[in-house]
Amino acid sequence: MKRSLSNGGFSLIELIVVIVLLGLLAGGAGLLILNPIAAYDAQVRRQQLVDQGEMALRQIARDLRRALPNSVRIAPAGAGFALEMVNIVDGARYRDEYGGAYVGDADFVLDFTGPDTAFNLLGGLNNPAIFSPGSRLVIYNTSVNIYAEAVDVDKEGIITDDGTTLAFVTLNPGPNREDQIILSTPFEFTQQSPGQRAFLVDGAISYVCNPATSSILRYSGYGFDDPQQIPPGGGGVVSDTLVSQVIGCNASYTPGTAQRGGIITLDISLGDSGGNINLLHQVHVVNVP
Image 1 (cartoon, rainbow, N blue to C red):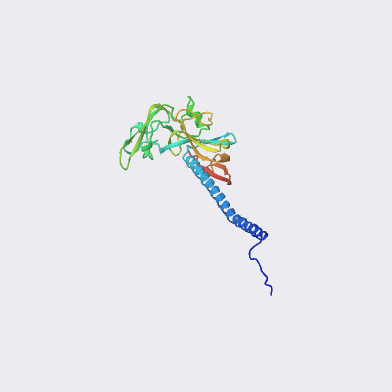
Image 2 (tube, rainbow, N blue to C red):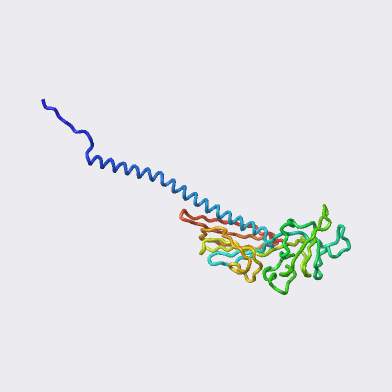
């Protein structure tokens, strides 16, 4: 009787087919894993761009809210913008009539009929610790261009002269405390503020957005320029990068009226290899001098 013999194992063709099938399965499984990972990475990058953009817009909004009324101006800067404002250091209300323990002493009242060197504030400064003798005093800024007023020699009685130093002393400490502002040289303020508001300012702040450099820069530590300088120059100017990866930006200003305040509209676009994001932000600008 003959016995049939069979050999076990796989042929070469079967082995190749199995390898090909395993490769296809592995490739499909890899796509199932890589696509969600790539999507997550793109989402993280976009979120980082959103965070950078929101932080930049909040910084700009914070400075705008403490800007001197009627001091905001915008100029083109390449394909972007240059936003400038006068920075308020502190503020208070000035005394324009006799009262308290100081009846009869005209030096305690701000004189609008001639140059004055000293007057009292109703109460005191909000934060005397940051008072600087180099600050300039502004009362009732309704000027179209406060920067021209700041550098012009024929003042209209809105902002004290450059070089006039300020000092303050506290009179009558206690519940009835009043601070007195002293000017090193006499100055005549010509317009009275309906709210008796007086502002201390220390110079201007600028934000320059330029897509060509992919950045928004913040400039501070400088004085007043007329016309507007882009970027600001001079001694003491400090520049900081507020945000990078900028691919587009725009800013517009709608001045206030008797019925509403001004509105600044900021539109910035950021982008990287993970995608682009666009942020639109509006800031209410108080223009009550």
